[in-house]
Length: 88
Image 1 (cartoon, rainbow, N blue to C red):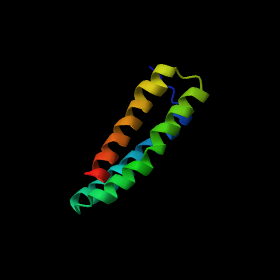
Image 2 (tube, rainbow, N blue to C red; image 1 turned 30 degrees about the horizontal axis):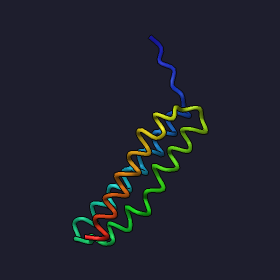
Image 3 (cartoon, helix red, strand yellow; image 1 turned 90 degrees about the horizontal axis):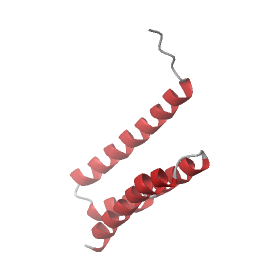
């Protein structure tokens, strides 16, 4: 059986993976240093990621359910977490 690879899909997944890994490492550093307020600001700034992901999904023919259900929910959770860290 021949497997046909889509190089564009591979590139997309590579970019997404390194972005997520980098953000995760930065969050781990902030947690280990007990930098709650800085973590809150980082999370607040990083809310742009799921919001722009939602726009990208919509611009490329994805469903509103995917855009708002996955990426919108993620943005909301990040905003709530950053709020708790910054106000707590």
